[in-house]
Each structure stands twice: as structure tokens, then as C-alpha cells.
Length: 212
Image (cartoon, rainbow, N blue to C red; front, side, top):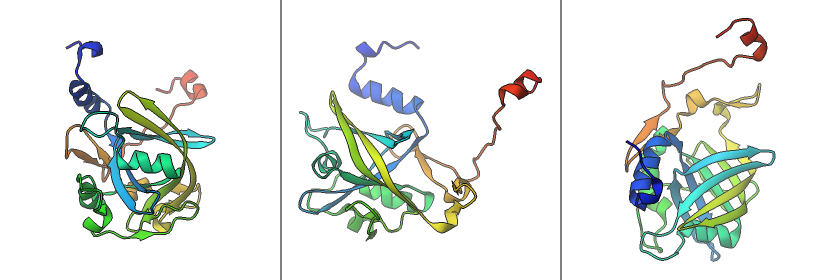
């Protein structure tokens, strides 16, 4: 099947992209508005993009009601300049899913999910206390493209539970953290438990010596 994207609708494009760009990490973003009210929402258009400086990127579409109305997360980040990306792990997937519910503005998603917060190190936005790792971010820039916003965040601090850190690197013990990724379609996820495949890199010198 060959598809010219100029002929595809937005929904068709979405359905195809999320099926091919997978699995995707999930950014469980906490943010606050100018009055200090907390918002928590997951986004799977997310990844790290740079390390010097450390930059992560999140794609946030506008509200589906029509027009160019940003979601609460995008508005909060634009107005306060700060947010936290909480890592979604297997033990928190149901609470994350509750935070994806389209609650009215007066509802606190974390309260609905039975979660609490803990102070961040650098930014004013709190992290989710039950999350085993989190990235504290400041807005680097936001690009508006069509009915989406690409938010680039500069990572200014990290939190990782001690048991998930190998101090030799330091490295994250990803095989023990059990992060969850997003697949295509609503409600489709992938576990990382028991799914690690190690394929050592081949140096050019090894390649010349016949290693394949």
C-alpha cells in the first residue's frame, strides 16, 4: 500500500504514524497554571533530542473541539515556563490512564488517580511522588505547527530512586525500572519487563577484522 500524505485526512495520518512510530515512551507531564493549580497528563509524542544541552521534546495537539485552542499542559508551560516529565512504569499504568481522562478544568487528575506529589529540586512544579523517576524541565522553546505544539524542554534536574541507579556510570537500571511504552491505538501499550535484547556495537576495527 502506498499513501500520499497530501491525500490523507488528519485521522488517517494519526492512525498510520502511531502504528509505525512505536513503541513510544510516555511523558507523564505535571504542570501548574498561573494560579498554582496542578495538571497531570500523559503524552506519547515524546523523546530526548539532545544531550548538550539536555533537551526533550513533546508534541501536544490542540483541543479536538476545533479552532486553535491549546490543551492545559501547553498553556501552563507557555505561561509558567516549567514542567516535570514523570516516567511511566508498569506499576503506575492504571493511574496514568486515569490522568488521560478528559476531566473538567476544576478536577485534579492526580487526586482522581489517588496519587500525591513531592517537591522538585529546581522547578516550582512538583513531581508525582509515586513515580520512580522524573525530569525537571524549563521551556526552551515552543513551535506552533498546524494544530499542534512542539514543546522543547531543557532538563535542569533529574530524580531517580536509588535502587534504579548503577553508580558505576551512573546508569539507570532500565531492566529493573520496567518503563511502559505506547503502541498504536487507544489503550495499547508495551512492557519492557523481560524484553531486553542486547546487541553489542561493532567497532570499525572489529568490522575490518571480519566481525559481523
